[in-house]
Length: 344
Image 1 (tube, rainbow, N blue to C red):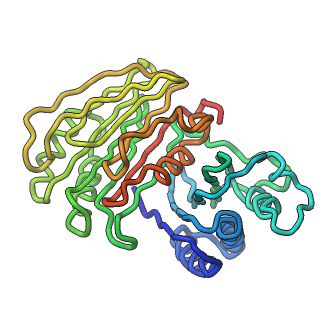
Image 2: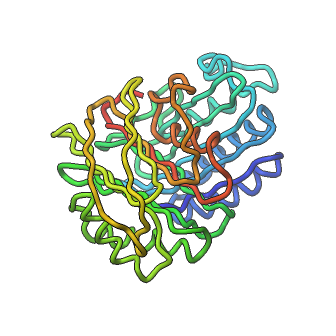
Image 3: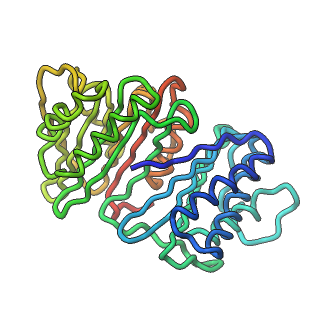
């Protein structure tokens, strides 16, 4: 499950590129003219905000279809001066020229879902999503919350823009549990990209197994590829546990309040050599946050360095970690997940 687009924003000409790219995405998602016009306004305001107030950054565009809803999600990421008072910025009042207030207020009013995370001196991350099937709220109306059992946020991008991504991910929402797969093909480029495509194809045939069983099946299926590393997490909410198995350097953590539990992956390469498959079990509750990522992200991050970020939507969590912790020498995937009942 991917299709994410990343646009590097350095100057106002980025508005043109962003609008061209998102027009293609709107067409693929089946958005009509009126909704596409609203998307174009959102993109224009986000790019303008990045250039004017941060001097540059990135706009990530992710189309997805889930639970009968076609949607486009935007992450505007920068390392600018940050926002001292988000509440003031989002008030529906007349701001002096140069203020980001009017632009972000417009983005919020047009979005089906909207949120911001910002630290003074460290930058801002803005999340906006527009749904095809859900009515866009009017001014002053609260944006609807995501209603599925688990809220998921993900960044999955290739090292080289517009090159096939050698990373991949998928989530199976079953009746009694949620199954998450993150996979990273060796290297990057077209040959590496064959690995997640095949892994996801096999995973979707039968995501009902236990993590070690799923990895064993993937190991056999990936012998025709250059191979890769992967991890599978199964969240059983009724039993309050996560069962996890990893082969290679996919990282996984469960964060509950101030407690972080790092999950164990064993050495090996799926499709090549691996000595054994082993599962590990960890506690899970309604306040937990799960984060899985490929080695395109450094493993030295700590959410304690980001006050309040754990309470934000998973897409913002994934976006901020990507912005600050990417190694910049490989494809990267960051997936964050939390129960839908957790207030954000």
